[in-house]
Length: 611
Image (tube, rainbow, N blue to C red; front, top):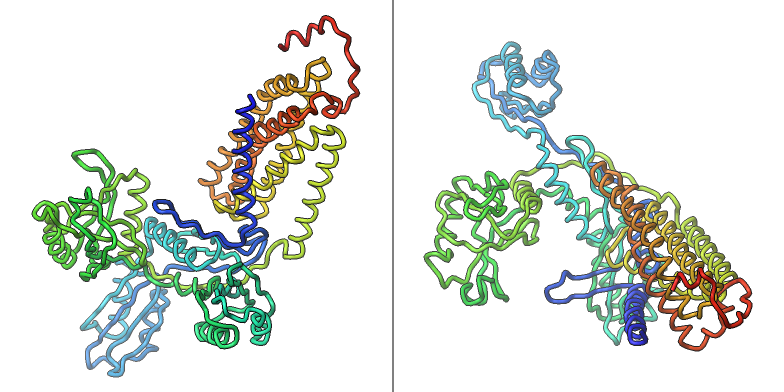
């Protein structure tokens, strides 16, 4: 038993140390080979991410640009001007912008998307009002499909995440609109690191003199975080760097993020899909079919514009999920030339693969196993149905441009505001302190154990929120506070059972073991019921778009799991440690009731039945 207690103590201390260090460090940057890189540097308390309702941000509404552009040329004897064309369009209730060429014969008409029947009606009206056109050029941008909008949704999420906008909210609104909410995207955040010989003491005054305020936060190792209320454009960013280098010292690293203008410029761009030829460090056969680093990528001119289709399918031989792709004539020629030179069937010692990039981010780097002449191929790689469908959507969204236009932009104030947030945190700490005082006063030594376990619970839970990371909004905080009550409740169940066993005459060590064993079924059943409820809320929230429900359920689920850890392991281990130190002979310290000494003799039947 003692060895088990020591091992549990070491494990608990390790978990608490990692949690405390992660909360104490303003920025976390961990890069382990084979493991996704962890970068956490957020502006909330303890480096936690705060949502739109807690820190405000930007609200952007984008709409897919759809429509038809008609370039109509009339014969030389047709006398027409812009007003005549507009009158002809009005006769069929079509609103379009009309511009006339210099020769006076060609008109450009742009307006809403015209289905074939509607287009015929417009042309007939122009013919009757002016003359039959001698030339017609049509450029259609039809309304986006559901898959196209899903692809754009994922691309926007990836793009704005790269610019430090801290967990944006990106969601569809109707068939052709996308709402983007960027928490904390007002102003700019400058992260700068100086050399050791820099005059750090002058940094604050230099920033204030330039009109950027005094919000300068040290991040350790000569690294500082400067937050500005206004967005810094390109020239201002370079000017600030020049001044810092001349007044403070040499700069090792300089990054500017958090600007809503950066996110806006990215969102408005068309997805860029590229197929590159990658030369590896050695033959694929010698490396088990893997591309060894370092490698170099070269362009062959094959992009998403050459892709005509991408769809999900299954391999006829293995039944595994694959993504089928089809190039147009130009793409088929380029793809065939590349695969003919690097395929493993005719060139077993090849050291090249095909690297597929979307917006500069590598999607996949498949091996060419045969010479593909018809532009039809498939990408395989351990997909399940959902991952294959996601990749197909990404490929098609890179090929099919869905132009977006910004139709609304507004700043969003936080619901609570900075002052209200600080007051809420203060109120929460006061409430937690009162709970701890009551538990200690009533349960005495056991109450001290509950207080320590509750502090451990808060540290571990907040560390999980930071490391995952989970963006905290009002519903998230509500779920976290409710889970604190459940954590206290578990300790009370344990202490009440321990108290009953002590009252029946058991020693403290025996009372702890029996009390925990008897309290565990109630703790387990109550928490499992709560976990099931959380899973149901998450399931419905994901399908019904209930962001508020998801936030509450997620933090409550994490809190319940951590509360079970602290109640079963931390509290029990602390009680056993107290018992081992000699406090076991002072059983009165572990119960609010005064225990009368028992005379030797037969124990009560109820106590015997519990052994």
